[in-house]
Length: 171
Ligand SMILES: [Zn+2]
Ligand SMILES: [Zn+2]
Image 1 (cartoon, rainbow, N blue to C red):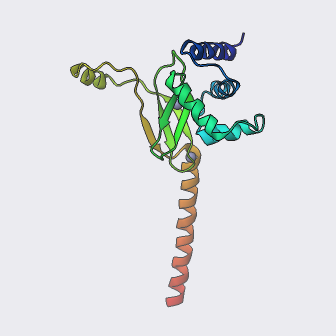
Image 2 (cartoon, protein in one colour; image 1 turned 90 degrees about the vertical axis):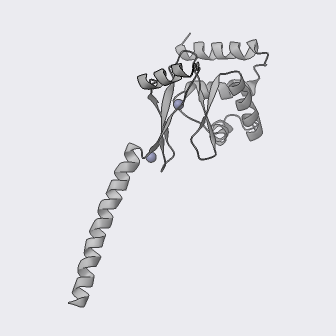
Image 3 (spheres, rainbow, N blue to C red; image 1 turned 90 degrees about the horizontal axis):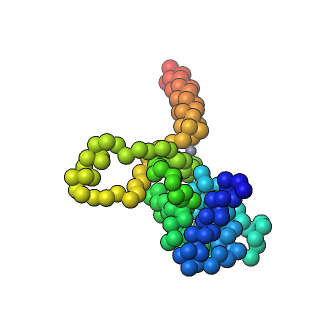
């Protein structure tokens, strides 16, 4: 049994242990999230990805299924501040991670994010037991910042040209 199949089998067992039936709809959505565990899907994206193979899977079913999967702790909901919930498979033994959110193309990437030592001291002082945490960094991904730099260079070139032209006109 492959690693993927083991994850999927355990996930289905969890669903049943929480008294949820493992319906075909739940199974395909779960499988998508397990297979692409690095992705952060919106409900619409899940719907689009599965529409080809499962034309009868409605968007409202996707929403309902995601609520169930989140409720039993199989998936994690992520809010990056744009009002659209994103979901990722939440492996039992995975270390908490942070997110790099590109404000231009919307890419969300995982990055290992150990709790800083100073933070642990503060939390202990509050006698607060942390079960989970999340942190997001907002900015431009490598591709977008390259693109942005390229545009900035072009604009400065264009600016020079028009400057020279207006200079010529007055002179
Ligand atoms: Zn980007
Ligand atoms: Zn993530």
